[in-house]
Image 1: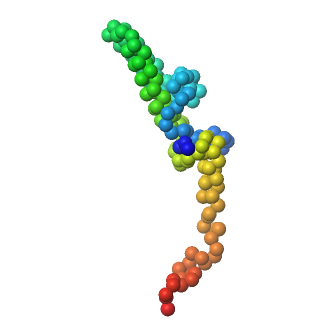
Image 2: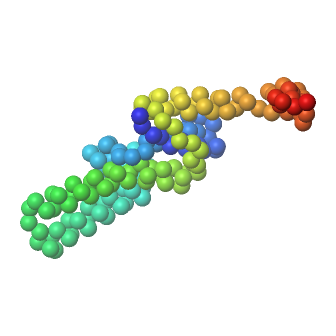
Image 3: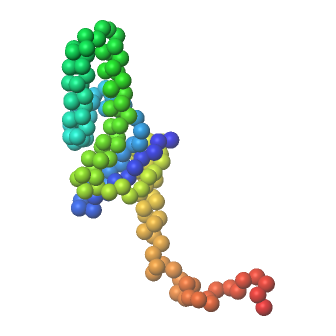
Length: 148
């Protein structure tokens, strides 16, 4: 089971209104960091990645580090970026007017979307007008057991 955060932007009325983001490690961001960041419009994350790569390259050159250290540092940095990528995506969505409205669990994205929309439909199905008349009035309903 995977955990997804649900983000909503009331400014949209189409399928962009709701966005689900998987919590945790992001495999596409590990292997295709720049393409992932551009596709997801995570500009701050892209900037952090590019600056991090440049800093690593300069530090390795200045320090005269021998193999395998540069490769290990690059792998560690890529793992750190992939671990934070979905959090960066949530922040980017917040910057575009989305707010986190729920958290759902599902086997995959489709399952999580289905669960969220089922829960949202159930929440909207119970309204004050759907309660039977006088059911909420004080004194209405059966007396507690043992009352005389």
